Amino acid sequence: MMSSNVAVIPSLNAPDITTYGSRDEGQVISYRDALLWTMREALRKHDSVMIVGQGVDDHKGIFGSTVGLVQEFGADRVMDTPLAEEGMTGVAIGAALNGLYPIQTHIRADFSLLAMNQIINLAAKYKYMFGGRYDVPMLIRMIVGRSWGQGAQHSQSLQSLFAHIPGLKVVMPSSSQTILETYPAVIEAYRGPVISFEHRLMYDLQFHVDASWIGTTRDPFGSRLVRQGKDATIVATSIMVLEAMRAAGHLEKVAGIQCEVIDLHCVSHPDWDLVMHSVEKTGRLVVADTSWREYGVCAEVCRVVAERNPGCLQKPVVTLGMQPAPCPTAKCLEDLFYPDLRKFVDALATLVIGNPGHGVSLPDTQSMADVYKRFKGPF
Image (cartoon, rainbow, N blue to C red):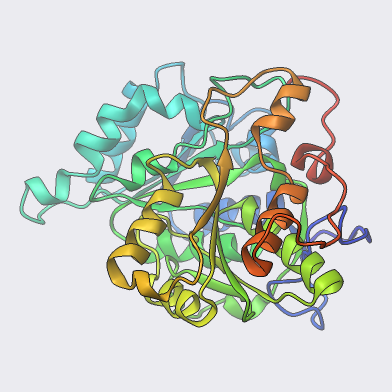
């Protein structure tokens, strides 16, 4: 499932997709194809794996991530489900309790709200309530992110709701590499429920990957240091890792400012030692998340730094996320709802240099939806 074409595009118009893995090996795979590969390999290697969800057997296959699997493995292992999220999540939990490994998909993370009782009160707590006698191994894929026209009920990033609950592991893969490192390891060895948030703007992106991950024992939940720097630390999730890399690259080019970037990856169980080591080195922290800042990942990172070593901060923490409102439907309003690269660079330059009139050249304003995927209309 390797993709043969790699777009050559200016750094300010596309993310630096060569951050992860080895360029010399020349292996390139899209986010979508990495997902499809992991789904196919899971079905091929493990007879216990089943994929369930609305549209998994459709010709579009959850944005291409399950396409063709029903023809290859049969409808008893790749099955469409009715509009009954709570009931079907209960079926998946029952399957997990009886030796199967369900991979449940929600083509919008918002739909999982209809299954909160099953996920939070059953999947997350079963092992604890029964003294460790029962495991609930399952993977729940949830797709998040903007386009335009999605509106308030189809674009929410709800990772903080699930990361708040003991018993759940919540990951946010930011590249093809992290998918390839995380999904197979989770399906192979982890005996609890995992929720993964995939950002829909990344599905078409091509990433260089390092195939040496095969057979390794790397922690699938570990945070990643993806760029080294000395002037400021950026802790980011999902597609905001790519935005952080773009902002860091611009600042180094135009102002010599070196930003360190950490991909938090597992927002429920981050590597706080990695985060603290970086913040203690740079003295400055920016947290960039795909959701609201209030009571979320941004707030949690700030809490941990404040509890562990608040004196390491030379400046107050800066946070970037969605505006505190439901997502607008109109694109012109949606562009104001999400942070853009210009705001990201301005916030970093102000933090490092120390005043709003920092004099650093800022990139043109351009929304993520225009940079990563050009939508022609709603949905």
